[in-house]
Image (cartoon, rainbow, N blue to C red; front, side, top):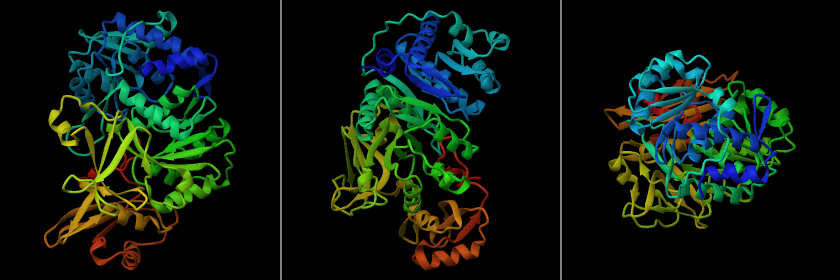
Length: 510
């Protein structure tokens, strides 16, 4: 089975069911399937063959969903592009992936046009724009208006043969250092993970997910695939800059599920009137994309009850998901990422490469059919993380006596202070227990005396009164001396990528 067959099967089984909601409109499975056939046939007519790469530079929308499945129907490989990319990053992504086609819209023309001029292998450009004269000036690239395809394209089903071992997607990591790495995922990788998520969330055709995370982000894409797999529906809400609006959409569309990264929930808790809402249809909330402080978990669990909070853990390299904490265990295992999802082995390896015992800290290692094929064009980096059929996550963790996993921190996020190994995550969780704090990030900075010193960045809540010295006094009561921040900086906001992850490298190198 291939990922595009998720759409095709639901279109056969639920042709007139609501599939996607965007800008106060619904599209059915039949409509999305038909339009994706039209785009797919256009790609094939334009010379796109099985195994070719086609980039997708588009905000969450009907067009994104149609384009994503159209590329896969052609037997091609989707290249997920960050919509916040600048021209230089876009040129890198296109040329590194060897993309032969791209689907985009007028919003991105300012960076796409100059990028195409420096991407000689890209020869097909489908653009949601009426005037294509500027694109037509690029000699090596044939341009087509997306709306013309919708109006006049061939909607017959393209019979392109693929197998589940074929590559389906290249997803570039938002790594804060070095060049971005293209995570290469097969149809098998994605579908294996999709089935496991559907299983533990008990998703059905009656489920409706609210999506505020971008689809180019692996967590956001998993929301699309899992709900299309079951014949459920997807509500797109791109206005998270106005979080109060998000709550209204969540309520009005009667969504049964909501997904976010830690900053998503921190913003909703601190910058909206979420406590005044009742979400009668909301069945569950999922959290992944980084560790969420226990204090925040408890508040989310309380405010959105009776909806169940499902804490999850994963990586782009795992097609997204590796573990989850059964919500029935949440109150017994605060801070845990739970146990491995179906069809995944997950364990902690000590420095000798052996399975660590309870409470012994080591690297979290995974094995399963959802693990990536490798990094695109990068065997050196691939060999660093794929060893003996296992994926070494780079996260430090431990298990308790009952086998529940806990993330201690990133290997790269451990601060060495005068010989002591300090987890930035542990300090961050302590800071977030203060009701004066909206969010925080802790880093290590060079220090001539202790090697590395601790620096904490804090975004205060509205109307907070604490000064830098007040925060230091509080932490002196809570943390041992070697974990005390040497410097505390108050900011209005923390740098983040489009998926809401804090970019610590920008704090280290502003």
